[in-house]
Length: 288
Image (cartoon, rainbow, N blue to C red; front, side, top):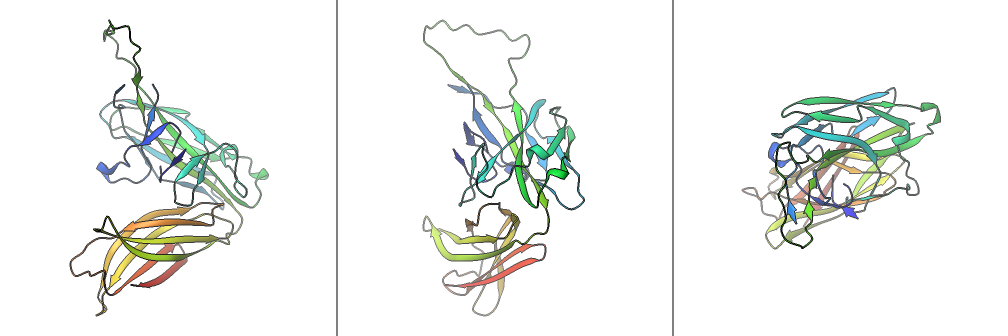
């Protein structure tokens, strides 16, 4: 089953990406476990949104916080994903050609957590078996799965007088965070191609493009788009943070909705795209 963006697990429907607090550190997923749906109790915030082991780094920390109103329990494990060409993810159990899993080289503590409302906790991730690592990149995803609360003590069981079979759906929420190990020098480069402009539903301006990755490592960074008028005035019209193209993928298509700012006429002028990742900076102009 394919899942779009940051999202990430089978038997799920995409819920929300913590919009209420402006956090993009993970994707909240809805799992259909068991014809009533009861909301999961407790929401989890995780930071940072990916952890990377490279160079002399042997440990990393993830900061977890319960932003909900109820105590919540989360079990921690690893899952594996393939990134698709459109940026969505599919769960896998066997690595694709050119893909390596990182979970067998990582250990974490604790294995489960219980967080009261507004409480936070640190999960430590440690790199192990470094003598078995060969140059390249390794990636797995750390999965924080909410454990649904059962019926509170003292609450009476409602008796069903009908003879029909009833099924109850319990939504369970979870977040996954990429855990990446990088060994050796990176030869990765990224370019942009296939830039085009369109109007989604005839009203929303959209920039379509493709990220092209070469080399031995994944790439991640931010994309900023500016409109340049015929008089040379520059106006920011779009930004996307934390875009990734994971190995072994060579490319990723992407769509960015552009803002309708005052003074911006998308029927004239030009768009400039800036893709930054440390020392990698690609600058393109697109005329339309």
